[in-house]
Structure formats: structure tokens, C-alpha cells
Image (cartoon, rainbow, N blue to C red):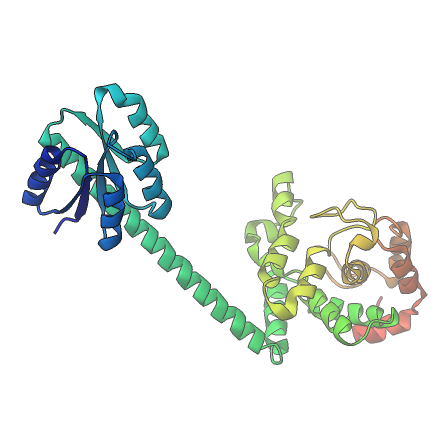
Length: 348
């Protein structure tokens, strides 16, 4: 069978003519002389396409069309109209009718139009079913992934450390940059009075601060020379990429905020959101200072480590602009020996 068709027209002869021709083509036809009976018929069996006259006693085909599209937007509707009703027919198309035919009509034209409408409807429904199935599978898989991630919250430390080590290796970091800045952040956070969960979240944010670089191409990330403007645009996306990766995982929501803000500046001229002062998460403000310590005192792919004596002038220079002044002052008050103990080596 090719489908179920409901023919709605107050003229019995037209209903019978259409029904006879469509039945010969393998369609199952139903008839109704007015809108009210049409709605009853629609409630009794599934209908793929409705052929409706416009002008009928009682409610019009326009009113039927409105009810149909409100209750079942996927049903196909073919309007029958006289030449004098063309404006109304065009209004029906705007309301959702799929096509119209004018009286008097040729039956072959009607059959071809119906065939095309039902084929189009079939394609639309297939696409809709596929999208719904795909969305359901994605939601199901995403929910399972998140469930698994949340269940692993007590045993992920080694996994995260291995991931970060791989990211550091990709960027050709000497040693473990991410682990060092994590240790520095924990040390300075403790000096600020942070403890417990707050300190744990700072630890994760610092350790994973560059995870967003997983979305940056090697041609940009590993470029030996200066980046051009378009490359900097891409590079500066990594806090947002990192935030997108981690923010949907329950136990990494706060670290994700630290990651999003780790390139903000205290004066509001950082990125990606130009946050200013205490708008920037405290963990991001701590990280900004200790990242400078690590960047200066350890070997980089493009230069050797600098003397520790150069760090203090650098922090003082950007105190209040790049760095939170209170955190900068605390950093500067800590003796070199304590930073070396935290780093597990002596600075030059």
C-alpha cells in the first residue's frame, strides 16, 4: 500500500472521483464531507495526506489546515481551490499546505502531485527519525561518559597526570611544566590560607591549565618563530577549549573556571573575557604569578633557564596590571629557598 489519504470535500462526486483513481494506484482512501467529520476520521486511523476543498459548509478548509498543522505538523496537505479562491489558496500555502490544485483538475496531475508530496513526506520523516535516533544515541553515550567520569573521581589522579605529561611532551616542555606549576600553586595557595577542597580544585586547575591546547594544531603550537595575528587568534582559544572539555564533568567544574581564567589580567586586558580584578577566579590569579616563576627559571624549547634573581623585578613590574598586587606581594615575601624546596631543585 502507498499510504492513507483523507479526501475532504462537500461534493460527493469529487470525493468519489478522487477515491476511485487513488484506490487504483494502491492508496487507502477515506472520505469526509466537512471539516468536523474529517477530524473524526483523522482520530480513527493514521493518515499520511489530506486533500481538502477550501469552500465548504460550516468550517472551511483553511480552518482544517490550521488544526491539522497544529496537531500533526508532519501530515501532508493538498488544497483544492477554484480559480476565484487563488488568494486563499496562497494563504493556505503560507499556513503550511504543501501544494494546491485548481478546479477543474486533471486526474493525472493530481496523481503526480500526490506521489511527489508523499515521497517528500517520506524523506522528511526518515531524516527526522534519523536525527532523533542520532540525538538519542549521542545523549545516551554522553550520559554514560559523564557517569563513568563521575564514578572515577576517586581514582583519576594518575590518569590526569599521564594525560598532562603527554601534553607537555607534545609541546616539547623540558620536564613536567604542568606538574611544577601545580606544586607552586598549591604552595602559594596554602600560604594564602586555602585548604581542603578549595586547594584540591586549585591543584587540578593548575595541572590541567593547558589541556585546551589539545585543540591547537601542531603547526601553530610548535611553530619555532613568532605567531602571526591569525595564529594568535587560534592560540588564544585554548582556555575556552579547555573549559569546554572539562566544565561538564562534575568534579572538574571549578578547575574548569580556573582554566578559563588563567590568561586573564588583573587590569582587565587579558583574554578570553577581559575579566578584571576579583572577577578573575582566585585560582587563576595565583596561577598567573607561579606560571611566570616556572617560565623564567626552567629551560624552554627556545632558551635556557634564567636566574631566579630576575623573577622578582618581573613580578614587581607587572604588579597591579598582570598580577593581583596582594598575591604578588605574598609571592615576593617567600624566600628563594622555599621556592626551591617546592620545585625540588636549585635555581640558577
